[in-house]
Structures are given as structure tokens and as C-alpha cells.
Length: 292
Image 1 (cartoon, rainbow, N blue to C red):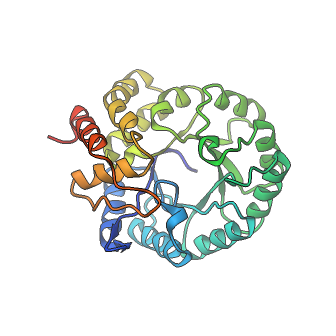
Image 2 (image 1 turned 90 degrees about the horizontal axis):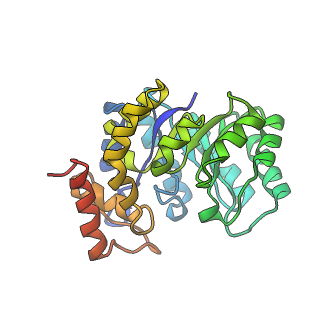
């Protein structure tokens, strides 16, 4: 259902508001260059700094621009179960085809708390749900065993965006849940090894900048041609690495600005990219052949 190169979309801003025209152009570019799906309102989309009305509007704009051609997986996770359910239902009403739900951050729930949270969210809508496991940001790691409990108990929970950085995690999860459980890498830099160990794709930051190359890479992986995929991965490695020279999405928005796709504006508490980091990002784009 969900596979390949799925872009974790940035949310462009203009004069403090969502730049709707630039955003829809970004989405259309993803479709035109072969991306297999898009995720609005995720971490890369600055979801914690969007109002509920803006969240709804961004999902609506995505659905409108995609026009049924590729899946739209709306980010809707928060550290409050009730609010997450509200955003999930709102995203479903806006036309999303799936939900990306992050493990609740800051609260640091137990594994039982994680189980009950995701079970409640999964039961609140009819959309397929991807668990987003990113302990580096949320300060909690859902174990494969808890994930297996959820997969067994909730028919709408269908997979995971794995940003644990644990190279053995896809093997452990596949052993517990089987090949039908969708595993997507949450880190571009680990995507090759992740796919070699049973992953089906990546929810990608780099796809904002190089959607065609990211799509080509994932198509080769899906075809089992990891040798050719590795060549593209190597070419994109400077991008994968240096789009995280500062906190995501600050560098990727600056990179998009360099390509003329949108402004580099971010919302507080994120700060504009530092001068030294700007040089690093610009150099990475040149190293990958994306910028002359």
C-alpha cells in the first residue's frame, strides 16, 4: 500500500502564513518526478507549530494537488491522545489516505501507555495507520513486541516509519509481524541498508530537494537491484548527511530556497540557518549535482 520514496513535505511560509501557492507547487513537483507518496504535517512540515486550522488546510491542499495520483499520509501525532484523535479525524475528513502517528513525546509513556494510545487512535478512524518510532525526538522507543501487540489488535495499524537508527530493527520487526507489515525507513542515510533488510521504502527529507533521484533509488531497491541503488545512494549521501547539519527542517528549507522553490522561513522556536551551515548545505547540493 505504502512504499518507495515518500516525501516528508516542508511547509513553506510567506509573511508568517502558509504559502499555499508554493506548497502546492512543491506537491505537484513530487508527483511529476515520480515520488510514491507524500506526508504533509510531519516533523519536516513543522506540524507542532501549525494551528489546527492550518493543519487541516495543509492536508486539503495536498489532497487537491495530488488529485488521487499518489497516497497522502497525513502526520497527526501529538503527545495528547485526544488531540491526536481530533487531528486524525480532521485529516480523514480532508481526504487523506493514511495517517502517520508519532510516539508521544515529552510525556515518556510506558510501553503499555504507547499500546493504549495507538489502540485508541487506530480505533477512531478508518484510515490505515503508520507508527512513527523516533526515540531521538520523542524520548521513548516502542519495542518490536509492543508493535506486534498493536499489529495483532488493530487491523488499521499496517506499518512503521522507523527512525531508531538500529540496523537490526527491521529484521526483528519482520520476525514478529511478517512480510505484510510495512516497514519504511525514517532516515535517508540508512535507507539502503534498511531496504536490504526488508524495508519497503523511506519517508524522505531529501525527496524535497531531489525527488526524481530518490524515486529512482527506491524503484531500484524495490526491484532488488541494490548495486545500482547503491550508486545513487552514494551520490545523494552529502545531501542526506548535510540536510541535518542543524535541526530539521531548517536546512532542507534553505536548500529549497536555493532551488527557488520557496522561502527559507521557519517558525519559532526554530531559528534561521546559520551562515556556516548555509555554506555546507549549498556545497552538498553542488556535490550531488543538484545545484550548478
